[in-house]
Length: 340
Image 1 (spheres, rainbow, N blue to C red):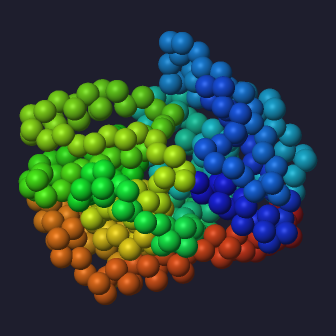
Image 2 (image 1 turned 45 degrees about the horizontal axis):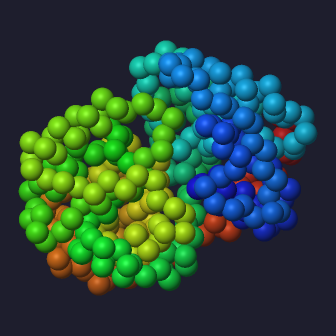
């Protein structure tokens, strides 16, 4: 989402933009149409049965690197560790910092931090981690959000389907705090609200965590609705229909899905992390542990604060992709004037 929205906003400002990506599983394009002013280059990356994550990472880097010609561009800007490894010297956006145990992925992550010659972070919190851990100074450029798209959405069809529901977007995985959310939901009255989970596409294999999540749901006697990936055109309505939006991630760089919920006027509850305090103070409820998460969700869903709702929408509309794109163009211009 970040890559496509930023690319389109850059093109709107007059830049010539090409988006390179791997096409996994036979994909020939993205999850939505892309502005025709943005060139799209998809490098086939067929699935290999039985391939380990480490081997898949190395193969992905090789495929993208062999196809990509950095000399064709004034600026090469990588958005993840695989593209940063494939592209060679580049600008790199560090969305958030991870700690991997797979050796190949850990090495990919480290190279993608230390080899780029300029860095962007989407929040000051992540920029601080980069400075503390690697001594790297990054330019902070917050995400944009298509606020109008979510503000105009109606959630009536989804409310008719599920009744009152608490929504989270991002799938079931450790970084999303999925089991913590399950525990918090079990403390609520399931007759009042359903828990709906959307999303879930990822490079990584979280089958063991998903199995643990399912076992815990059975123990707690709760049955969340797991939608999996939701079509691009359906997502705003799903978000707008929620009684509250839960965002209990343990690691994020910004919180784009949470910002989309604020644009839709949906009460937001996040884990109490520095990055969320930085981005969402005044617009969200924060929870430090599972009981607090349950209390905050109950409060958000049953007694929404209208002033906080207005502050959230105002915050979302202030984060435009046009502003983000202009900040990127300013950075590119300054870097092109250096010897590098």
